[in-house]
Amino acid sequence: MQSGDLEYFKLAVEAGSLTRAAMIRGVRVSTFARAIDRLEDELGVTLLERNHTGIRLTAAGSVVFQRISFLLDDLDEVKSLCEILGTGHRGVVRIGSLLPPVGGRFKLVLSAWKRKHPDIRIIFHEMGTRDLRSALFRNRLDVIFFTPYVRSDAIESLPFFNENLVLALPSEHPLGRRRSLTCDEVRNETFLVQDWGRDYSIRDHYTEILGKDVTIETHPAGKQSVFALVSAGYGVTLAVKSQAERGFPGVIFRALRRSDAHLKIHLGWDANRQDAVTGRFVAFIRDLVRQS
View 1 (cartoon, rainbow, N blue to C red):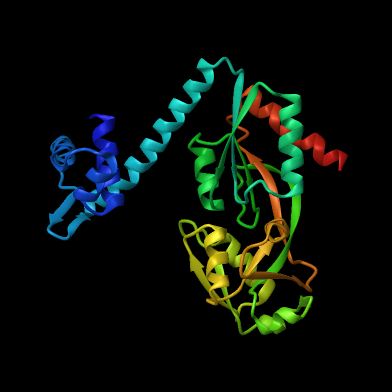
View 2: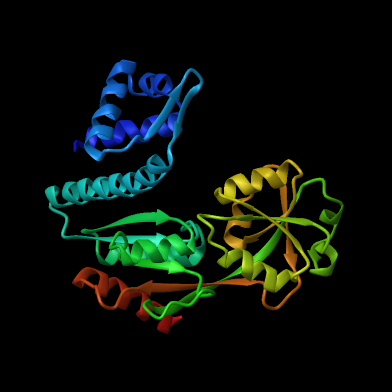
């Protein structure tokens, strides 16, 4: 089985048709068709239903597509690691995080680590809490910054920091005239929440803060896309303070008057699988937490 055939299959599915996929790659449609035919012959199943409107995954194709996506991600990571080794770097730490590293605490840690260990490269991944845990145990990540609202006895962790939550509203929203708001004042709003791969940990935490009767609408998208929907008037959302400080066109941010309006972030790692570089990073974070 050739990796090129796997890549052609993945691209064809993402493009929605062999013609579009061929245009993206700059090859003939027949090249894609032969690659997928070879893959189907080797696997012994039909992966795609093809017609004049495009292509559609079969039941077997859906399963294979999911596994191939993981496989190609792992292959890309192997290539990246080999490139690192080839350049003479002494190590790498693969970090996964629920939040982008834009907050003051994150930037402090990353810059301090860079000064202390300039030869150790960091590879940063952003994903939902559920995917973070999965990637950690599949050895695709070394450490994760995650929310501990869904406990896992298999993850060793330590508190890293709490990030304050604020309300994000459309700039023309009537409540925007106030500097701070209570949960009761936004009870009738529709709250837009990120949902990566049915990861409901953040949604459930928001429900604890806002109340079980609040209307929540989930989107499998990044926070920037959620802000865009807020800007367009589709609802409101909660955001961490570091995201609010960066701002977003058409969105205003207001304080939420509630003592538990924050997001807990922990550093997590698999104690049963820890190399020297990962252990050094964990110890580094632990020392910073103790000093703060």
